[in-house]
Image (cartoon, rainbow, N blue to C red):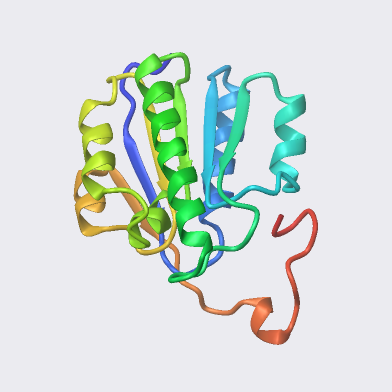
Length: 175
């Protein structure tokens, strides 16, 4: 159990925000800490992290997203909003339950950017989080209010990406 849990934010347009949080999860698990990751806007469970979490006893991952990719102003917005609110409820339960040393809210900044849940709810969660819980928030376009509340904020910039060369996401590397 951590003596003092901090708030970490990984944001920016570059690749690696979820990967950074998974690195933290892997490191924490190796030290015997319990980790819970909520993935917002995702519902496919095909990522390598899901397979790895099944063999690591102290990492749990749940997804709260619709099967289709989110695009603003589409029919899917209602479904994504419902899933995001379910994920928020679960996040509050997990953080406040103090069973987990680290809680990762993957893509929560994107959820906030799309106005699927109120920013005030996440700020409230940060303010009320138990002292011994490490809270990690990922996703591009982190609101300035979130960054101000964080103990650590890293912005990942994109310098070059294989997608611009026509290389699609690769199993085991991007998912």
